Length: 78
Image 1 (cartoon, helix red, strand yellow):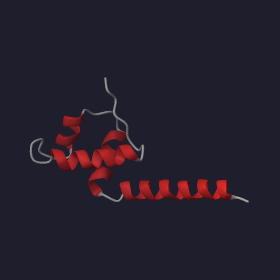
Image 2 (cartoon, one colour):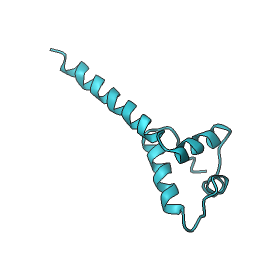
Image 3 (tube, one colour):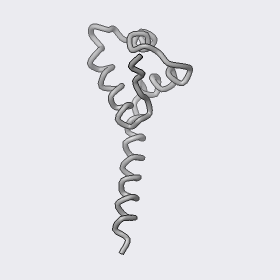
Image 4 (tube, one colour):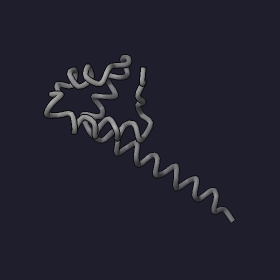
């Protein structure tokens, strides 16, 4: 019986789907490209993306959380 192996395969497939979904948004790709050059503060990242801190904060937070859930980015609390 290979139920453990099937569960691992299914989990791996789900992780791949989540990563593909996370990278399907142009804004999330832009976030990854900016962070690839080095760490940025939350507000600096928003500014570089051309987002307004007051009107776009919710949208930006949504995209950052999506990337964090897939472990494509992490927050440095320092």
